[in-house]
Image 1: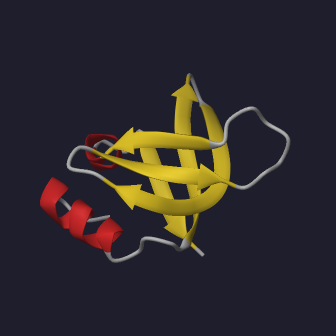
Image 2 (image 1 turned 90 degrees about the vertical axis):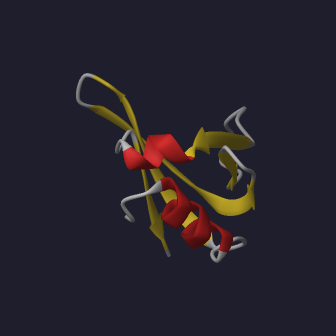
Length: 77
């Protein structure tokens, strides 16, 4: 991942519409893995629409700082 918020924004803007695997630190050695599509970017956040697997969550949003601090990681398919 890039080392600045501006680089992260540019990378994500170029990848809108692509499938992504999101890994989120859920605390104390727990990691939650989500699959979806990067749908939109905003000045402070980005939105991922999740693949329908029966959960109540349909979309999630994270800040670019979450990526910078490694609380969230993305892998494009």
